[in-house]
Length: 385
Image (tube, rainbow, N blue to C red; front, side):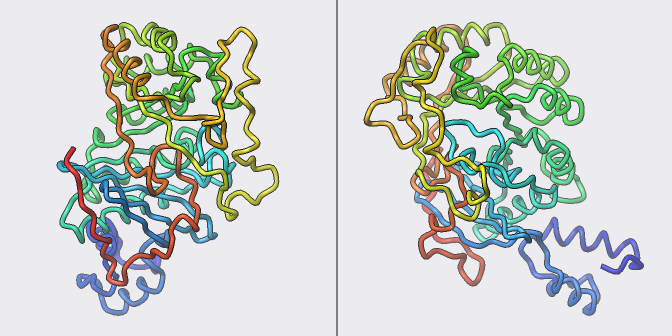
């Protein structure tokens, strides 16, 4: 827009972008025709939807492309009474957790606040064609949100602006592998937003095998930051724990986790590990130094005083396999018996590589599927909660 435009025109444009995502500027009737034409040429989003894929469990995965050609993925998860958008904060991820497809891509760049917000706008546009509304946003897609914290904080303020999209702070959740300084800053600046921490191990030696050293802060430091977060916000901590068969799913692991969390206001989400493919998309992995899934350290490199849990031939290419149903239930029972609120979360979208740990922006994972010309999503049968 012309910087000399009247102030109320900016407000009208903002209202159109936030209240009518996906609607062309040519239909923004409060604006003059000439201005509508100019804005339509500039575009209404910094992201372009390149492809879309849906599954029968109510999940849709959007492949979104930035102005520089970088691809990210955003996931829509439909339930009977709510809809959640899982948004990305980085192209790739610098952390590089051993069991995560996104981490195998390496790191290209941070997303801007506009790119984060436009993911949500893209989701709202999809849902409006279904006469559904967005209930929750989780910062759990590609990337580590607390390593792009300023953009995340700005996006939170935009998403919760009552004059804009108007989401409630408590409907937003930020997930982190555990960046203590970021946890404390999030508490200071957005105390009503939910915090989720991905622990994945209850002792530092095992956790160091799953999370590279640069971002693997000692558990004591991570949890002390989490307790400081609660002291300021009074918001229950969500602990995410991916169960890897024969690695971190033993009764001893469960008892150690219970001891770490005892006496604190927490809820634990247990997730079976979602298998990932061994071939990251060339558009993100081609840069020199970006590790492939096959290059991850073997679990056999764990310290000698850590219990031996050698991968079997049933492991995926990254050396892991999902925990068994019996192991998951046994793990849950131990936590519950120690009075730790615990649920087993059923991952949605695993059949289309849209579940936790599977996002890798692979163009070829969208076989012959592009958004319909009218913008409407494919038919999806939404199961009950």
